[in-house]
Structures are given as structure tokens and as C-alpha cells.
Image 1: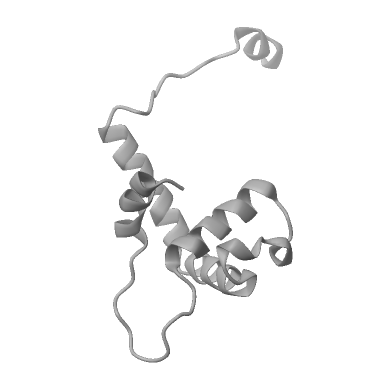
Image 2: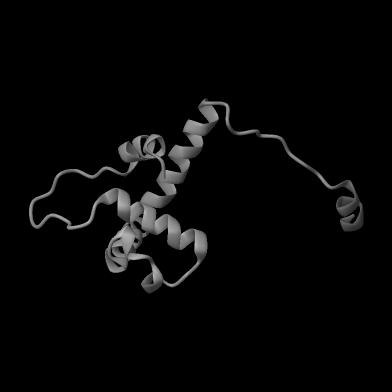
Length: 102
């Protein structure tokens, strides 16, 4: 992911500072690892080590999934794209398919 993409995403995926042991993996690397895994469909264990630990990326993905953070992230990114005029809300209808259905 580019620096510009990360600067946009960083504010959406930041977490409050918590006490305890800090993560040994950079959040950006883990997010890139999650993106790689979702894009390729490969098993988590096949995630390249350049993205950090596959188990840390998986744990982050599952935590965000159960907290519905991924859903909120997609909605926030769609809203930003809509405000920026990067989403076209046109509808395409296949008349032949509708006629067959009727």
C-alpha cells in the first residue's frame, strides 16, 4: 500500500493506547498482510513473512471481524470515496433478463 493510502487508512484503523506488552509487528504490515490474504485467498500460514506474523495478522483480522470493525471500515471508506466523487451510483439493468423473469 502506498504512503498516501496508508495515511488515509491509518486514522480509521488506529486504536487507543493500551497498557501491557506492545505488539512486535507494525500495524501497517499486518493490514498489508490481511489485504494480501484476502486478495489471494491463500491460507493464513502462507502469508509472506514481509507482512509480519501470519498468526498476528489473523488475530487482528478476527478481532476486527468480531467487533464489526471491518464492516465499519468499509462503510467509512465508501463514504470518503462518495464525498470525493469517486463512486458512480448508476444502475445497469438487463432488460432481456427481466423479460425472461416476467
